[in-house]
Image (cartoon, rainbow, N blue to C red):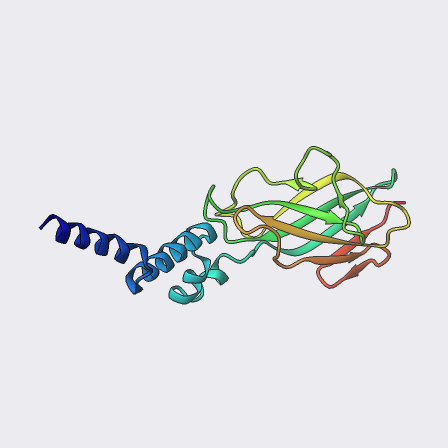
Length: 177
């Protein structure tokens, strides 16, 4: 009797050591679950919630730029931005002036943007905010202006400004005297 019980116990131990279909399936499911948790289930959103990624796409758009050069060769940029602000959890939080090499021009080097926007504009769309003291090297003739969305970052409509031209598509330039 003891010998039979001992043999049965050895069979049970052996059966759990050998990979069975159930054990392998469990390991696969656990591995996939861990992968989903680590990646934020982004692919599940695309499969089960089509259009969700488009809703979260960067959508802070620059609509118009007015660049005014001062006699001291510094510039003031008046930038009109449109973004579907919903409150403090999602709003356009800044805009940048970029040189052709990608350098962001910031009057305040500690600021995250050329112009930091400190609050949502739910009831004021589109809105225009200005920033003075923007120094652009004299040999630079074009800049790009882009807006930033607190949730989705950069990626909305940008405006390229030709500083040697009085106006263009979505911009106006006033040269200093």
